[in-house]
Amino acid sequence: MLSFLLKKSLRSQALVLTALLSPLPGLAAELSPLPQVAPEQVGISAERLQLLDTLLRQHIDEGHVAGLVAGVARKGQLVYLQAMGWQDIENGRPMQEDSIFQIRSMSKAVTSMAVMQLVEQGRLGMQDPVSRYIPSFADVQVMVNPADPENTALRAPSRAITIEDLLLNIGGLSHRDSALYQSAGVRSRAETLDVMVDKIAATPLVSDPGAQWVYSESASVLGRVIELVTGEKLDAYLARHVTGPLGMPDTAFYVPEDKQNRLAQVYRAPRDGQGLTRVADMDVPITVDPPLLEGAIGMVSTVPDYMRFLQTFLNAGTLDGQRVLGEALTTKMRQNNVPSALMPIGMSPRNPWGDLGWGYGFTVVVDETHSAYGVNNGEFGWNGTLGTFSWADPETETVAVLMLQVQPAGAYRISALFKALVAQSIVVP
Image 1 (cartoon, rainbow, N blue to C red):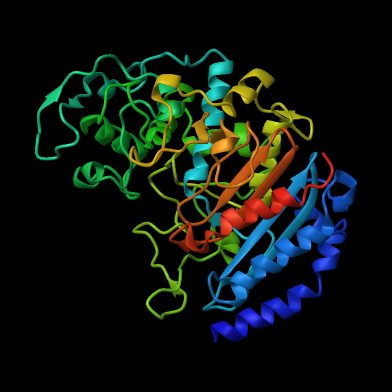
Image 2 (cartoon, rainbow, N blue to C red):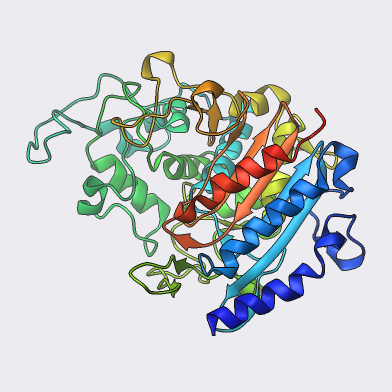
């Protein structure tokens, strides 16, 4: 059944590839995240985009992933937007250009933009202690020896955790999947955000604030700060001040009933001789309005929506006449802000990134010579644990977003292939 569906999809979608590389008429144009032009008008090779298309489809034809949506823009103009494969194999639903995906950690940048709006308005200070807004953070403790989980000795931190510490993942907090947070029951989608952040505050820090970069739940704590500063729930604030003004109608914390026919299901990549297998829903499914509004990993979005979000950073904080953040702070968000003493950073101290730093919600290329593939210094973006991937390059004025739903997220290195082929499609500076 899977092989039949995949081959049927390839035959039908191959017929429209040429049209997709030209301006989209009618309804398709309404789905476009940005104005669309022929690739050559902005220095992109249509022939090389077709190679990208062919290779992405090959992964679907071979059963590596169920389906995906990919989009590429340059100089604010869309040159490629393609849906291929299936968003729901069991129910025979083909992928659509506006299919909705769980973007997981790509949520962080959306939450970070909201924080920077409040900073710009003077309602929040970068060096403000988090405890000014969340009292439980006044009593945080640090593990004396975090390398020894049996050692329960604690001490007071060297200083308070600040808002900027959370933006940079240097506040001493841990990751939701860490043994420390798992054992403390820190995260449950059935509990509210205030409960979660108080659990985080009650769980020992793994380092002093400002002493170490640790990828963490910091953005979720920032989401609670946003609520307390504004008096609005996080989802309401983002809708009014970020996703609404930017024309991102499908970016939210769950998929309502009237949009569930566009939800891409999650599949586990083939292993042990088995094909794609569907991954069970979370305890509170993504189709249910959750008690937990998790700014670090909780959002859903589409390729058109997220392309608009990234384009805003290349446009100095504006899109379609709507300004959501000033140029100075928009630029600050997409620059590396990790202190040099803490570099290099990485998901594992034993295997640091030689090419990347961290802005506010994104990784940022700081040394292109250490990258495994061609990049430019200043490129920024991030990915999600279910296979979503995004990046933007101020030097080439390029935005690219790839969304799929697969575990593990890096299966078959599809995002790296996508990144390389998009870069190679640029033929005119």
